[in-house]
Image (cartoon, rainbow, N blue to C red; front, side, top):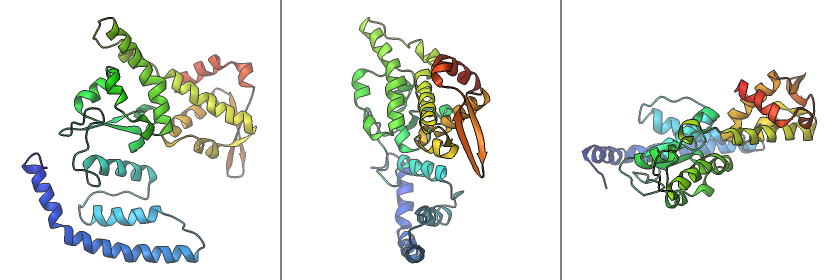
Length: 276
């Protein structure tokens, strides 16, 4: 049900456009069929993103006169998230994942943007303003934390939640047990060190395991929500001469200069933090 006149007007505008939507769907069906025939002739379906581009162009440029950039995978991921959040595909109002409130909803990143967390739904929580603030301050109650379906998030987001956010919340729960209901110092000073260390260890292990590995291939082994962080870490490792790079045609091959055991993980992490 619409909550105000603005939402009612929005619904009426959508209803008025139904005949145009039907026309666009028919046109898209013809274009997609032609693309499928072309792909079959080439032996494989060469780009499913082209179909998404056709849909977004038809419904976002021609109908809404919205700015459109593409093809760009990150743009598509963000647009998918916005579609769900704005209720264009799912329900009009997405409910808070903790309390179910749906009158005002925020998109809350699990892995923060400063660490390369994306705008994909697998790295977002849909929270009401109250629970968004409590989440950011590590002040959710145990019962509230348990309402979030972490298994529906990306593996990296779930790992960050367990390795960083949950640890901070447990400190808050300990304070609550002692009768102290206040923001924890970790809100000001908590570091994502354990999570970053885990990514560094993963990258070093993969380089050590292969002996010499393609840079792009190495980045792709990481999930989308930590790839930007992985790129920064590799740059830091190169600048600190912990890993070496060798050009082989168009490829950048990475190798370890010394064994991580010889350098020491603590020393490596100190150098990486200085560069991030």
